[in-house]
Figure 1 (cartoon, rainbow, N blue to C red):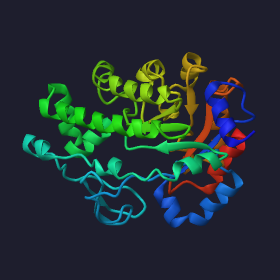
Figure 2: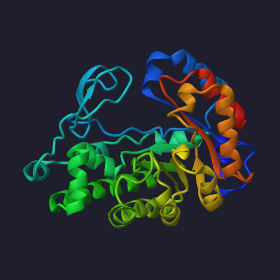
Figure 3: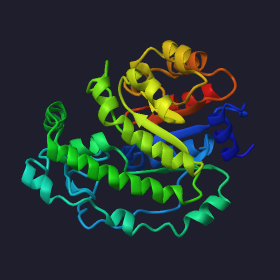
Length: 333
């Protein structure tokens, strides 16, 4: 069974030979522990690969991401890094009033000048499942541009200029989804971090009114083209699991250990694929390999009914011992 077949069978609940593997190594791992990363990838090869395409060059990005100091991203947002190997923080939002919002122009060059010339050949030759990561993250993008506190007030009061900006972002993301829908990639991933440790960051009712229709449209575009949809969110998002299933998300990556894993399994096993994960707040950095393996067994008991619907994904943070990451994949295997 090829990796592509394995992932597809897992998503369709059609008895893959094992749970597909995917390791997310944070930038610090690639920067400071690359030899360990190479060894891990040899020992536990991923069943996923990227698209073979690239977005267009940015007209605004400058500086070096993941280094100490400031850099500006493709959207014109300035980030400050206090330590190497991390993304950093936004100290001052660039859209701090209505005038700044009105002047702002989205980075259409990322789509207009995207180079997808190698995607067809890459997909034709790949034995792995081809999944593309996108810029789609409307809630977080608004936070990056406006600042989190400002945005929460905007949503509460329905600030017209910000809702208009969200419409523009949605237009950008629709074009991005349509762009990838026209390629032979197998799946497309989008994201937004919606949860605190205990609940959504806004009310479920507001989420359903403002943001659910956006994600639903992305899923419709991709499903019409025969693509699988992957959605990531940090935090406790149990309240919107039924909504993600309803709009057609095929695989969800969420912080299972912020929620009641057994309850999630009881309610949603067989209705959506659980795309990881293992507790990266406590167990992976501070636990023992035996404790990590126990956690994998807990996830499997709750979510894996033996016919698919699970992906053995975990995230490798800079403080996580390599033995704990190996323990994740050993236990899944």
